[in-house]
Image (cartoon, rainbow, N blue to C red):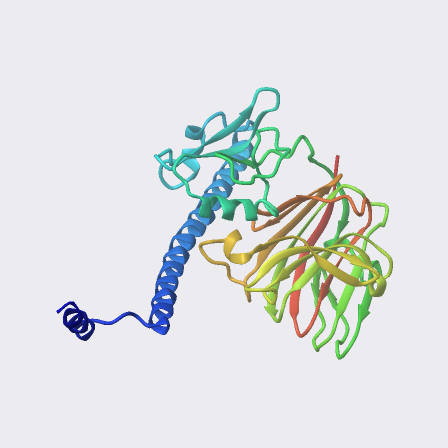
Length: 344
């Protein structure tokens, strides 16, 4: 009788095969991975939003300083410069960052109910942006409960002494190098137009004894993979050595990058941020004029695009040098209103 029941049970059901178990585990793994990716992308998006909010409030702080002669004392001082009130909710609370000794230093974001995805995104961006974990701005942010965004520039300011102006320069003030099918650079008043054709084109200008300064220029990339701006550079353009900022839509999905260059050969990026992280609301890469600013004081480098800080990092490999520009591949760019101003 027991044997008969056992046979009856075997007819009604059967064990799962190894293949079926493996398929089930794979499906579960795929679903779990999809859920993790969904939550991860939400966290990344929140981190990008927090970074954008910090930069917006930083820009508002600079406007407040220029209009009133003083830095803001609290977040209410900034609300007049932005659209709507400044968030201070159950997840994120923004405010001015006030150091007991230095006074206003930037903007802070207190993260109350913010997950690891957003914190990891902010930590990644902190390699290129001035996001710190302490109000003294000495330790880069790495997942703590408060993000400090440095705005005040530590007392360094342009002295007003112009070191170079493209409006007053002549073609004899530039040193050129081209390779491949590139033609010649065109100098039209204060405007520099890169040569047509494929290959590399570089130019250099200024004094190799310059140390701390700010470069400002307006740029339009018409086509191609991008253009670069040399600073603290030495040597002829063909064998140039120094730093190179790159406006580079051909790198990844488009990035702002700073590299070191030795004897004309670029090294890997020492600071980088994607266009989408720097400008979450969109960025017009081609045919649009953009204002580029590079300030280097001691070991600190600050790069701005359209008045917004996109890179802020420390490196002391090169302490002095001239400036310049480059294009590569089939890129065509126009650079205008170039000025170099001494920073005290």
